[in-house]
Length: 245
Ligand code: URA
Image 1 (cartoon, rainbow, N blue to C red):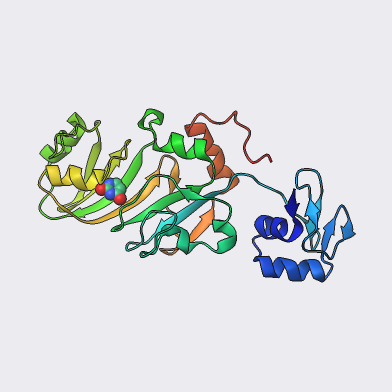
Image 2 (image 1 turned 60 degrees about the vertical axis):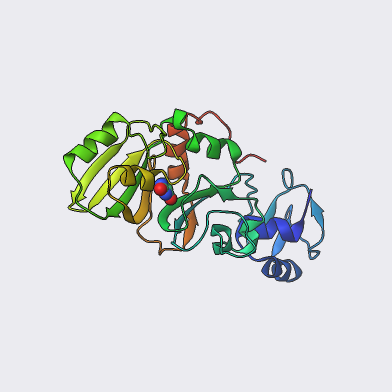
């Protein structure tokens, strides 16, 4: 059971106060009848709610794609620093979304946020074999030997061994790095291990999902049905029934 104004806000993208206004104006129907009480408790899995004729679908799980800017930390809240959750309106924050994995404060690019723990867990786990691709600009000149060391499985300066990874040279000091794991500062530490400290790092893709060129840095959108479908397939979750209340 849920308050009508909250249900309308969460399913339609309206703010809570806009939802209250719509309800009071009589544009919200519950089972075909206008209900002007924002605090009415409804059973969202059984009752049909429409706003201006559009059905509100309750979706338990939400999936967002964010183009993370630098200077923002990958956390849900912080007393001092701006977090990736601060880039979302309160209605969306209340869905209980959290970042899938982590990008450093100085890294920009594709970050997924969801309230689906299983989905997040599978994306992060190296066992799923989900590749993450980063664009990096480094100090120094990249060489085929660097790429060879990535392929062989690098040992970082602290002795940590990495899984084999790909380094594709795109310019004297520019490359694409593909990894399947997400150790702390992984790509920066890998490039440092071959003597090429990172100047700029940007994540371009996670498995089949890519940055959306129509989004500006700092903007987000929900994943499309098509994107969800290919990602569930990649995660072997296609039989799991998502978005049912
Ligand atoms: N590797 C890093 O070093 N930093 C990131 O933010 C992501 C991967």
